[in-house]
Image 1 (cartoon, rainbow, N blue to C red):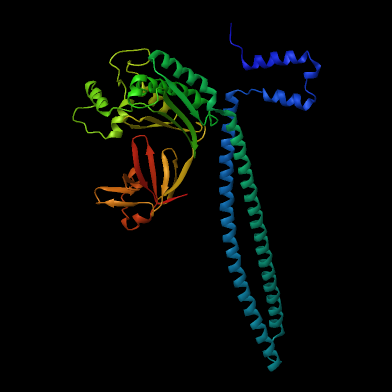
Image 2: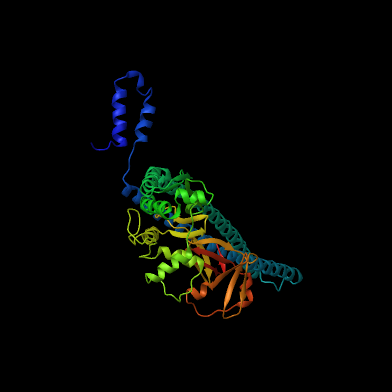
Length: 451
């Protein structure tokens, strides 16, 4: 018998309700709301709407830039009019002085003064006054134009705000809560417990967090694999947990939170934790790392993400095939996510997954590089470090960034972009830096300014 969908169930309920007049909607408005609640829109249409909204946002930004440039030109024109009025004022003053001289000359010597010169003065005086009036009218017109440009800029700002609200609403149509996949995750834990003979309880928090439906669909298989690993490799047997003074039933905690532009999933178990010595021995045996290769504890923990690594010597229903966490890491990279591993011996292991809220949009941080402004994706940027938060130390050949008693690899964005040398060490301590944590990458990238 095929499964009954939610639409079919709703249709059956509506048919049954239609037989009873008292159960029908009391008003047409309630009936319309019921129909709207069951409306379905193809995902391709939502993607097309998002594309159009994105293009209109870009067009609005271009219009705002044109208005800004026009306002700057209008301001320059006003300055030119001020200069023009100043020159006309000087001309008017010179004409007035000349007129006084003409009158004095006519009073001193009436016989030697030519009346035509006085007429020419009067005409020049009239033209000068007309110039003054024209300059005043022109300045008033420029001020009106400036006012219109400011009003247009305000309208564009309001339009941009409305477009962003529309974009957010359209984006929400793609968002689904994490709790929609909870039954599958719980079933995976129960099945693994039955196969391994262990006891584990799955505790979920933040399942109301919204996530892009495409990302959530791609995330289900990695999450199920991690939960199976937590039961199979992390949680100890009942007898062993009792010997260690732990609760006979293990606990796996899956927490989902929203941090800025990212969704953070933390999967933590209270098992035995990762045995780094065993991981290194198995990795050397399988040829994944060289015997003389020096690795930090964090790098050793990330060895389990490499292809072909497995701690099982024999194949079981849940593990031992050599295809495991490397597939999880690959799938996370495909959806622009990252994974961090934290583990303490005897206390358990925590996998921290960081994912974008949606694959349709990417947030960027504007930074100044020389005379250009560039946009850097906020993926992996944990914090903007101000000069008082940390400092650049070390020698000129080997610099590092010290932040909260932690030594971070130090880079300048000019060097990463392979720009010509511009070593301005004098203002190095006054520049901000970007704290980047992306899987195994922990570094500070210094930039000129951030916007």
